Length: 84
Ligand SMILES: [Zn+2]
Image (tube, rainbow, N blue to C red; front, side, top):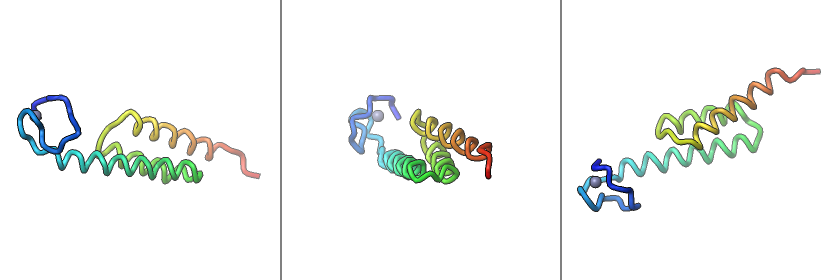
């Protein structure tokens, strides 16, 4: 809120803002990214893409962006792979 550096505490030491809801969003986004990674590992690229996008909707991160790109790229690879 006051742009003080985040110290991992729920209440900002400078302005007293309650950062709890923000931290919950951050944790939820992290869990979605973890689930996206698990889906990638399992080869379910469509699911991974969905989860990564949901994570980005909650909190935009570089890791989330990379997961989105990677999932989309792997999914595209699935589609152009010749089926025989
Ligand atoms: Zn503050």
